[in-house]
Image 1 (cartoon, rainbow, N blue to C red):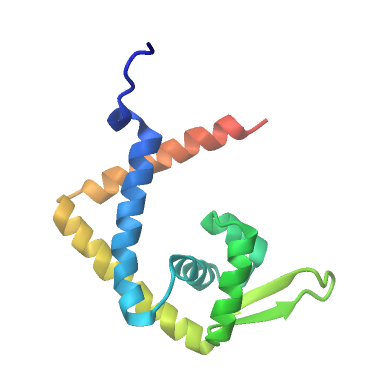
Image 2: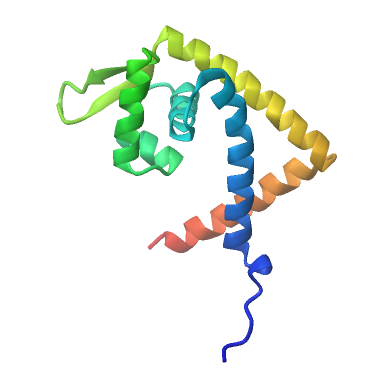
Length: 149
């Protein structure tokens, strides 16, 4: 029989669980106000932060599959929060940007995000967010360096 495995000490499991808890908790905030899905929020946030992007860039930025990005782009375009522009040199590629209405929604949801972050900071105590961010940056850096040829 294999030795017991301490799942609570397995970093990928703990990070995934914490990310899911935080994501679902914050999703309640914007879903209640805007009836948005998590992929819609992630796409809106990516475009609001970066400006113009392609669907491929949105997928890479938010770690979403291209099918999910495509459905999400269609939903945001249907709300008139996003506009698509064909790439003149490659018609298979579309550039995505938020419309004025999309920018307004992004601004309001960014305010919700700031309030949510402040409530997390209050719950976790002074300096906790900074320590978590530093640890995450270290994990990302190590894993990205490991992937390099």
